[in-house]
Length: 320
Image (cartoon, rainbow, N blue to C red):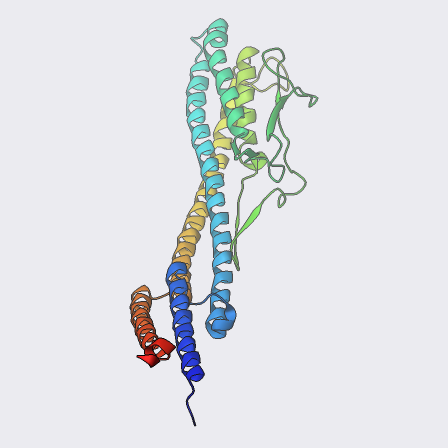
């Protein structure tokens, strides 16, 4: 077959085009750090990559849930810790108030004012929030868990009124409601919250009863006002409610450890999945750079050869 000048020129141009195309692909791999840009370039690896990416997104979602759950439970534990500290102070004050050597005015001025402060602090802790959501309100996370009311249930604000009840405003329909579940994995859930009416309402009520008993001088049993809590009965109620509160705190702590363990496991699996994804997608930079340098050398050689071949075909060189 006769090799024409046009065929030689076409072959030269095609060789240069192929070399440029290979160089462009290698440069794209290096700049993007990805071994392929489209699924059609490597369908098998692309399919595996998409599956791994889907798994990684699920892991990220579970990990975010675990982190938010840890924050909520930590806020709950901190509230319990501060309530325990208030309980210790309240018991010391009540024991001092039960001492018969104190006069009524001394109790009202010294112990009464301190108990009022503790009531306010405890109520504020009962209405603790995490990211603006009330942690003890059951599913009613956008409403305060507790409010002080009179005997008829009408909210009151001391010192303009004398509240006698601590009212819970969360979900109280059944013992199993008001609990929020969070998923830490496909087959793992954990209870996020602690219901305030079950865990701390009795404690808050006993603290309020103690404060009212001092104000009304109802110290020892039986009191002079029938049906009115005395300082002595409020102490028993405070001690009993403290045991219940500590039980709920221990339960919250156990679930915190569960969430921490799940979070650590998720972090490990995320690292492993990311590593597998990198193996499927990422460019071997050392290999790609070496191949690019070889391709550049090849391209320069093609240019040089093509230049000589094409220049020999010019009329000027032919006349020489």
